[in-house]
Length: 324
Image: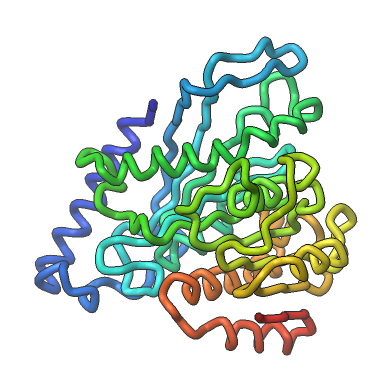
């Protein structure tokens, strides 16, 4: 594993100062009621770490000769201190791993990741070695590398939990390993389905999953064998104007899996901007995606009751929400 030590050190120092200030103002940090209840999007801390899995190779791709290891540059987002929110149990908070789509960019996850972190979650987004937009040899010829991505997700979970155990890390004693979720977009959605419902790749540490415009229809053929009906609580969200992953295909997948589950169609949503954002474009529907995702994870992990309220708000705007 490699990381950015100066960045981690800066974040660790900031977190330590904030924690000390909190102790002075509020007393013992064992009392969750003394934790702040919110943080601003601009106050979310960000950093990156590079995780190297030496047990698995990266296949050749175009002009890229391949490599004996898989390297996952991973962005991190977190509140400066744990929050008094359903995402956190005292000083420890749930982990959400974001899985990007084909030709995706973890930088475009910044808006959604900040909203998850502002709700208390620790967020990690790896760039998959061959399907990210800057992949060596070009991602257009690397679609088949998706078969390695569920194991990438599991490896990132391993490495992030190792940082939790590292006293020099900003993540030290911050992650609740009982509460781990994966949010997958498009091809990353197929990755998330395989990581939770395929015999080849299931990681039982994943306790909830959010699928955004998931390419679920490729899972059985790509990962071998049927998709299990049983799995963790599953949220699916798709836009009505998605030209690549249709609402019909996602709804069909949802009918095959067991509750608890939720299905959301965002009226007017496309394939990309219900979850991704750029400096020039932040779709208001991304806020709806974030609100429903936070509410669903909060319910799945802490029994919070915001899902019905968020669902009612979405329905009042003309969106479709089915809860089961």
